[in-house]
Structure formats: C-alpha cells, structure tokens
Amino acid sequence: MNLSKKIFLALGVGFLFGSLFNYLDLFQNKIFLDFIEVPGSIFISSLKMLIVPVVFFSIVSGVTGLSNVSTLGRIGTISVLLYLITTCIAITLALVFSNIIDPGIKKNIMEVETFIKQETPDLKNVIINIVPSNIFKAFSDANMLQVIFFAIIFGITLNLISKKNVKLKEAIFQFNDLFLKMIEVIMYIAPYGVFFLIFKTFLTQGFETIFELGEYFFTVLLVLIIHLFFTYGGLLLILGKINIFKFFSKMKNSMLFAFSTSSSAATIPINLKTVEESLGVKKSVASFTVPLGATINMDGTAIMQGVATVFLANTYGVDLSLADFMSVILVATLASIGTAGVPGVGLIMLTMVLNQVGLPAEGIALIIGIDRILDMTRTAVNVTGDATVSCVVAKIEKKLNLQKLNS
Ligand code: ASP
Image (spheres, rainbow, N blue to C red):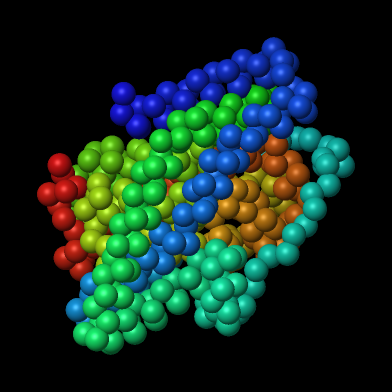
C-alpha cells in the first residue's frame, strides 16, 4: 500500500473509532487521553523540527540557483500580490454566501463561556519584524518571515563569493538533500501520527455541537469548497494552464497532513516537497513561495472569519453596513499576514475583525466548540492556496516543469 493510502486509511480509522467511542462515552478519562496525545504530539514535533532547516537550505539553494537577483524581486512581488488577491476573493465569497444563507442562532448570549482575549499582531510591527535583529532567536523561534529574509541575504551573498567558495555552495546543496530525505524518513511514521491525532480529536469533540451550529459549520465548509475548486481551479487553469485534476491528485499528501495537524507551518516541509517534486515547480520559486504562503496566506482562515462575523452579527442582532463588510475584508486580509500557521490562530485573529465592526469578541466562545474541526478543513485549503500560487508564479516565470506535473 502506498503512503497516501496508508495515511488516508489511518485518518478514516481514527475518525471512526474516535466518533464511536465519543458516542458511547468510552475512554473519556484523563489517563487515556494523555496516553493517546503522546504519539500525535511527537509526530507534530518531528514535522516542526524540520521546518527551519528545510526552509533555510531550500531558499539558499534556490537563490544561489538564480542567475539574476531581480528575478527574485519579481517572484516576490507576484507571489505577495497573488496571496493578497486570493485572500480578498476568499473573504468576499465568505461574506456573499453567508449573507445569502444568513446563519445565526438564538441562544442566550449570557450562557456562553468567557473567551479569553488575546493580543493581536499590529501591522507596523509585523513589517519591522521581518528583519531579524538576532538570527539565532529567529531560528529558535522558527520565525518564518525572519528566516526567509536571512536565507535570501545569505543566498545572495553566497552567490557573490561562490567562485572562491565552491565547497560551501556544494555543502549547502548537500544539506538541502539531506533534509529533504529526512522528510521521507519522518513520513514513515505519518500514518500512526495521523491516526492518533484524528482519533483524539473525534474522541473529545463529538458531533452535537456541529449540529447545533450547523448553519455556520456548513456555510464555512461550502465556501471553502467553492474557493478550492473555483478560485484555485480557475487560477490554475487560466493563469497556469495546469490540469487541475492532476494538481489536486498530487496535493493529496499535503492536504492530508494539513488536515491532520491543523498547522500550515508544520506542513511546510511536506508541501515544499510536493510542490517541488510532484508539481514540478523549480526550487528557486517553491523554496520561497511555499514558506512565505504558510506565513502570510490563509484563505481558509479568512473564509471562516467572514462567515463567523456574519453569524455573530445575526446572533447578536447587529446590522452590518457595506462599510463594515469592506473593513472586514481589509482587516481579515491584513490579519492573515501577521500570524503564523498554527492550530487555532484564526480564532485569535477573529478578535481583530470583530473589534473592527463593533461586535463583542466574547462571541467567539459560541463557535469555539467546533473550531477544531473547521481548523482542519481550512488549513487544508490554506496549504492548497500556497501550492496554487507557487505553480502559477512558476508558470509565469517559466520555472514550471509541466512534464513532472503531468506525469
Ligand atoms: N490552523 C490554520 C493554519 O495553520 C490557521 C487557523 O486558521 O487557525 O493555517
């Protein structure tokens, strides 16, 4: 059985047993829950362990492979623009569909548990913090924008001295190969990791809350699917001239990983490998667009925020004006730039959006119960968006190997 099938099977079995035991109210004690948390957490840590070295060595190898530094500027500009445009489309779709479906519940607002407000990032600091003042801290915090920045400068400088330092350049390529191979090694435990992550999620979640918040849940799901197939499908087809069936079938592993871990950051190593080796994007583009996307591009998250805003406005009986909708689009797009792709961060960013339109952040407590499951699905969309933009940029820059993609 190939790895994708094993992972898919693990996901299905984890889901079945988790839901069944939840329904029968079995194994709900702390000792058992702690016990099954161990393999899943080890799996996520082993993925996270690879993020910084994989990103660093890929970017340096990619940049040293570019003949011209201005190409990098162009790749950067097109990717950032595409990331911003797709996020704006995502949130607009969310607002349009949630206005049509009009989700909301009648619940005594006083009943909800209190949601603890968290600090939200502010854009000025996000921009200043792109440049690390201490590279060791940037590496140890796995601060992606800082690691990307340093890797680019490192690659450019290495190019300048590469005639004298051929060995250093070769060593970088070898380290890059080593860490890409390490991803394959970690993939062997993936089916077990995925099983335990999914099993625990469904063992502790249950389905009652989904039905209670059905309108909200299914509106988010519907818009995620529309965005996946129409926005990404359209971009791939029109700008990339890419066979979307091939694209989605090759994205299986990345999407499954994102779904199981709920973290686009933890999925960077796998997504980078998929985009380079299966989708045929050259390293000079993929090494840069994929980690950048995992940090600044979160379309699925923006969709949840759009639907949640309308849902909470309906629930609190607040009318949102066109100006409110415009500011939701702006704030949700900006908020996605400033936050790393880790589980549940979308809800923290939602406080920013709600503040903007005068809705109480405490409303988040209403939807927190089903957020874990939505987080899984929106993270799968987030990483697909990164791969889509990567393919389109590669196509525009003539750095896409269509033969590899279509093989
Ligand atoms: N978990 C998402 C991601 O990693 C972010 C979120 O929506 O909470 O992309």
